[in-house]
Image 1 (tube, rainbow, N blue to C red):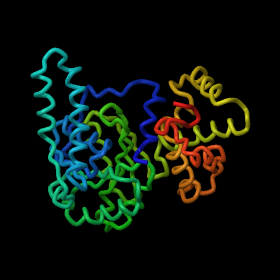
Image 2 (image 1 turned 180 degrees about the vertical axis):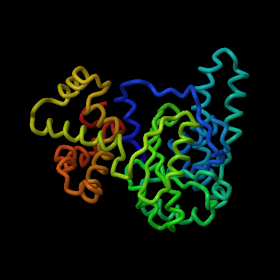
Image 3 (image 1 turned 90 degrees about the vertical axis):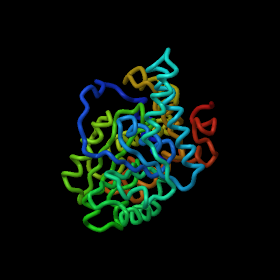
Length: 319
């Protein structure tokens, strides 16, 4: 799933922009990012851009090379805008930032000097638990451990850790694409110490992002609000209240949204929506059995047919 829903939040954004004109200082300087996909490489890029020493970790060199390629392409786009008429300056800009990023296939070695470790791997609770159980043996005791999960409980990810580690474990949910999206949800568990939350908030501000602190609850803030909106839209369609096109038109012109709910569903991926909704309805803390997250016959049928949205060429609409 990998924060696909989070990516869609940029399309609903309205209101005053967050200003990063005054950056906050943070004592965190050495970052290790586990996972070299688009999310992990994006986090690494932003941290390196703000002069942090970054180590990007993945399972093999091929995955690391892909992550490095993501960063280089993204930075080149930034450089072209920043230094439109100066190719030499563009190259210096990219090389300077990339020079702060090291690559590694050895996670325990990579976290041994880290101030902050951010996990951005597959959305599988057991895989994440096992990873942090390994990392906790090698990371400094004062290091902050964080997960970038978009849907899994932060406290459950930290379940195998000792109490001291749990007190320094937090959620840092970035939004995709990381270099462009300003928001980071800072997710606090019941065990985490306040100074860790404060340090995480200060670091998020120091890299030019806007923190939103919330409790460890399913969907955190953005996805918790976004899912019911999309599911209620599908139920309107199922009850034949209006067509998908008319519902989309109504929300774009009546509520000022840049995309309608069905366009948004197709963009996110219908399989992703079903995965999250079914999980919350079955086992979500405080959401189990909640009718807001009851399975949708229409959604189930489309997923079964392989109509997953934009990525498959067909969803509620054809592409």
